[in-house]
Image 1 (cartoon, rainbow, N blue to C red):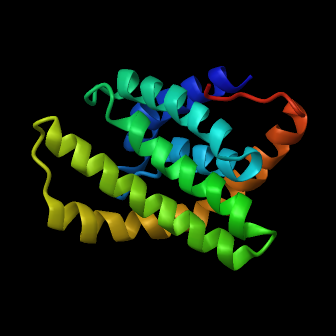
Image 2 (tube, rainbow, N blue to C red):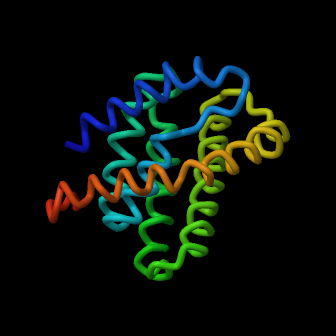
Image 3 (tube, helix red, strand yellow):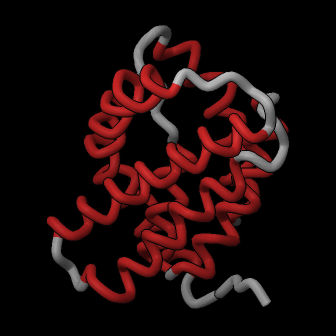
Length: 163
C-alpha cells in the first residue's frame, strides 16, 4: 500500500504541484508524508518510506538521483526519534519536531545538490524560499498528519524495517 502511495506522491510532487503553485513556494507533500509516517510508526519505517519515496521523486523530477533519499531520511529519522523520545501527544512538540525536520531536510538537500555540482543560491534558498516553505508546510501538516494517521490505522501492525 505504501509504495504506490509514495510513487503517486512523487509524480504529483514533481509534475502537478509546480504547475498549480506557479511562482509561489511549492509544498513538498512527500516530505510531509514521510515526517508524519515517522511520527506514526517510528524512525525505521519513516526511513524506509523516505528511501522509496526519495528514489521515486528523484526519478520523476529529474533531479540528481540520490539527493532526495538521504535528505528525506534525515527528516524521517528526526521525526521518528522525536516521537519516540519527546512527543507524547504534545502539539507544541509536534510543531517543533516538524520544524526541525523541515529545516534539516532543506539544508541536507541543498548541501547534496551543491556536492553534485549544481549551483545553489544559498541566500535565496534559505531565507526567501525556505521561510515561505516552512510556513506553508506547518500550515499543511495537520491535514497530512490526519491522513497518514488514518492510513497507519488501516495498515495496522505490518512493519517495515532496515536490517
